[in-house]
Image 1 (tube, rainbow over the protein chains, first blue to last red):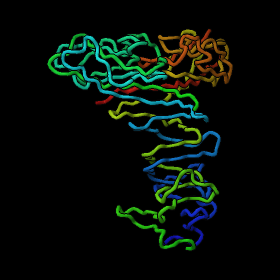
Image 2: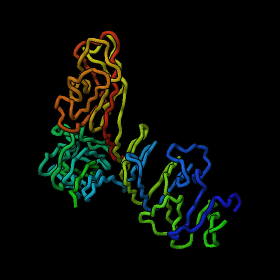
Image 3: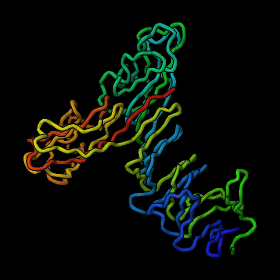
Length: 220
Length: 214
């Protein structure tokens, strides 16, 4: 154990856990990338990772200063499975999330509308934006696409007369029919309707659609 | 080396990296602040009783639970991805804008497009950081060619006066608003500035959306 001294101990603590105990005034550091610690790192209970840190299970942070539990100097990226939840003391929640589905408009259909399978507008929620991409262009027939809500909305509020070429994208803020100037309240789970100007011919058409929304749950 | 036993090892692992291997059923802890672990139960777990700082990236494949605020410094944004790289980004733009002597009544534009395209504008805020020497007494703030007073309507020009769009706009936007195209902010005063320049610091908070990439 070269480098360890008697003032720097690794030992079982009173709880029976293994514990690294640097002497007072010295924090524990992993790595030597040369970056100095910020002002948060001052004492022997602190930990400074000069490289990357990975937790393959849960990460729980309990801050002690009034405003900072996790302070980031660079971006926070939430991958596909990750959403953001803001919880109040009694279990009420604000859920900031997204949902994606791919819908097929089969040959011989489209002009009368095709329903999506998922409730792409969940409720109760605020729908922030609805975006789409043509992942497979139709073999023929349809040239334009509308997307909107069933029931409370209208069939082209999110996309009005969008083209159906492979890779075409849409944004409800710019490509809808203009009914919604901003985010809209959604009271119940709602599927979306995909309507083409003509039925699809020769080969199926496919659309991938993402809804960004904020959903609310009352206290439990 | 009091306290170390042969069942607790710091040794190179199969990858050649240094690894702390407590015995089964025990966690590794840094510090001795007298706190107990919060749900950590096994020897693979790691518990820091003080502050923790990471100079590079932090990867978490489980749930991250915060018992205090998430604080994003000026260079940091929050981005949420989907399986096909669709994403939404919470971000802000900020500018210090000068209204020179002899101008203001016809409006002054921000240098950059403070309201980006494909976004939901959540709100705009501002502060007078230098009052005009004379002339102008009130100012409006809004998107250029959209709403000249939608974010601030007849706000006083005194030093350190602030505005927030939900409270101080003209009411044309009752809530967050979609912003289709890249757009600059326009500041308009009720009279041209005289004496010395006026300066404002303005920030726009928004969510920008990106469609699926495949």
